Image (tube, rainbow, N blue to C red):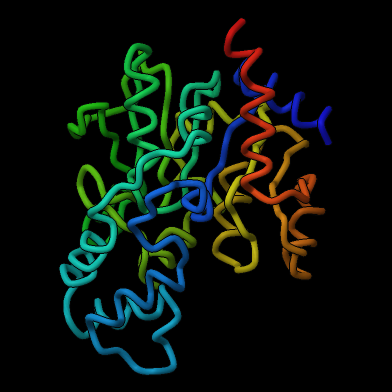
Amino acid sequence: MTDLIHEIARSLDTGAVIPYLGPDMLSLCSDLKVPATPLALAEMMTSKVSVPHKIRKRLTQAAQFIENFKHRKSVVHLMNEAFVATPAPSALHLALAGSGAGLLVDTWYDDTSAVAMAQTSAARGWAQVQGLSQSEHFGNWTGVYGADGALLPEMPKDVARLLYKPMGSHSPAGNYLVSDSDYVEVLTEIDIQTPIPAAVQAWRTGRNFLFIGCRFDDQLTRCFARQIMKRSSDRHWAVLPNEPTRMEARFLQEQNITRIEMPLAQFAQDLMQAMQPAMAA
């Protein structure tokens, strides 16, 4: 395992690996201030708005109910409240943001990765691209934002680092894919790659993905990962300390993703230690 971690560290330094982060990355933060699982987010939202008992723990269905019987603005307001605080980036957030990886994918709604990019990538220039809800931005699948949070008309050609938030993010504009209808719109087009930004499609070609803090135990997470990594290399890794479900195991095999069977905190420590020589060189 040590050799593999050193190989990943070297590949991060050369830009051959794309970090793909999930909600559990927040478990590495010392001051967790936001919901770090879909269940926690659903419970937070439904503690403030009454929804039927059977969907109170189902994030996308609960958000859809609130959207239908309150208003889309109510969903956005609840999401903004849930993610108004930003946990201080963990050491791994900072190490990945400061590595040679030109693209970093983050599939949760918090602003932690953006803060890490701002702290480590300012000199090189960076931007972020976020998924947009069709109910609010019909016809536009993504929004591009500069390091200062300003909405840009298109992807700048001189950006050295790109943060991709396919589900949206709290900052700078409160963009969220969270309700059933949000995902239905994207999933009808994702097979032909329409919602995937051209810059992401270009950068992923021939590169490896490193999945950290992710689970693939529901259809949505598998679908997004499969489509985002499309036409990349044929070798990837995922830190999965818990035994995969049957569908997760099938997905790992289909996508040639090697499972790294380590606790996330231990992997983070080992990877950062392996990255130090490369970053110092």
